[in-house]
Image (cartoon, rainbow, N blue to C red; front, side, top):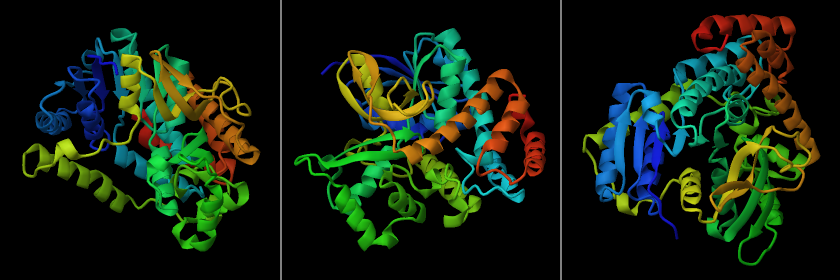
Length: 427
């Protein structure tokens, strides 16, 4: 087992969803002991909170890493070997607009985060933001390996690959969520389930599910579980399984962003009051209390997150072989029936200090056709950012199957969103 001391920048460290999780995983890594973790966030108050949490975690583990903070992104990433990015601006305020305004004009989206008309505006903002961060990385750490955790994953990662020369990968934890569901329905620990999935991020499908020890195909048992306990499976997952014969890694909330028939199956999934209270305020509150020492955690005995971000850094830094369940990379024939250079999610590994994607079987054709529709939209959205062209963005909006029903309705929606979010848009 190799060991490496590297410099890692975590941009967006003040976000309480990923910041503490990524920090904890770095601190727990035996292969990265002695490394430096730089917490980077332009919001000083949130950065101080992130540092308070990180310091307590690091102290509890015997201070295996050096922790620094920086509010200036350029200085924060300077000299970094690895840069992790998970960041947005006005996250909750903008998401509420992304969700509610398109529906006012007849959009059938159920979430408005990664697909649909709301997902398009989310993409325009985050691709622009990430390219600005990448510019700072290219100037101050041109050889760094960038790991993107920011949604919409495939669109942001496409923007990074088209707009920069940085070595990079997009990472998401939805594969692990699917494995947890399999473990529950099959009554097997995760380590006894050998599964592989491929597709487009948040629209990725298990093409192989086997017993890790016996090699038994577990799909018949999954099918039996759905038939015996249909109430334990959500509406879209059941419909898709019945139509396509495959189980998704993600839940209804994500796969529904790409299905043209979504409005027939489910009502809108987001309740912003509850979501902000549970996901935003609660996480912040708990982190504040922990940073102040108001409660204790058995840090040495807590499991790591299951995210595959730190394993990538370990594998690249030490050159140890490291298998990976899901990486988002430009398609180079890895999924044969999807276009080249679109961002696909496939298994992979770190081998001899390189990230290697695995070539997988063709995606089930009806699902592949849905993905091609989305990839055509993504192409226009990313080009709209790179060329600062609102006309391209509008054409992408019109093409989305979840957009308002007429071109006129799309134009009204587009103009309203443009007026509200102009300060963060690329044009």
